[in-house]
Length: 285
Image (cartoon, rainbow, N blue to C red):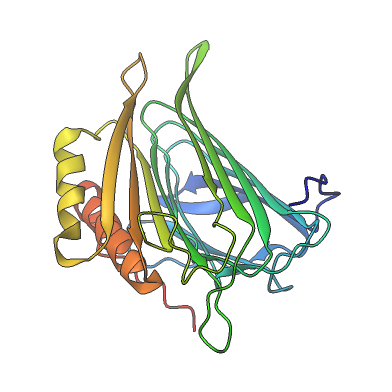
C-alpha cells in the first residue's frame, strides 16, 4: 500500500447557505476543477434547499485530492447529496483522498446523504471530514461503503478505505470534541470468497446524528428499524460536558440496497419526528 501524499486538488467546492425570506439559499458558491453543484431544488415547502454535488470526471484515481467546504448559517437548512456513487478505481503510487470541512450555525440543519462509495480492486481511499456545530444545530450524515465487482461476479479486492469524522461543538468561548470516528477497512489478502472480514459481511453503512433531541429512546427506536432487514446493527451515544448529544449507527450487510433502505428508514423517522417532512425522494434521472 502506498503512503505517498496526494498533491494539489483535482477539484474544489465551496458552498455557503443562509436563510432569506423563509427559504435557504446559496450565499456563497465557488468551484474549480472536477467538482461542482447542480442548480438548487426545493423538494417540499419547508424551505430546505437541496444541492447535488457532481464530479464530471466520474471517479477518483491515484493521487487525486478533492476538497469541499460547506457552511450552513444560522437557521438555514441544507440537504446535500451526490449525483451518483463515488467510485474509487486502482490507485497505483498513491491513495485518493477527499477532505471536507463543515460548519453549522445555531439552529442550522444539514442532511448529508451521498450515494454509496464503491472501492474497486487495488483502490486505496482516505476521507477526512471535520465538522463544527453549535449546541442547537442538527446534523444527519449517512455513508455506505461497498466493494466493486468484476463482470464475472467475483469480488474486487480494494487495499483499504479510511474514513475519519471529527465533530466539535462550539459554544461561547469554547470548543469541545463530541466525537472522533476513525474507521479503517482493510480486506484480508489471500484467496478468500467474498470480503468476509466484518463478521462475514462485505458492506458497511454508517449514520451520524448530532442534535439536542438525541437520547437513548431515539437510539432504541432507530435500532428497531432493523427488524425487517438482515443487517447487523449497533448504535453508540456520545455527549459533551455541555450536554450536546449525538449517536453513531453502524450496519453490516451484503447488500448496498439493503443498507440504503435501512439508513433511509432511519432518516425518514428523523425527518418526520423532528421536522414534519416526508421520506427523502432523491431520484436523480
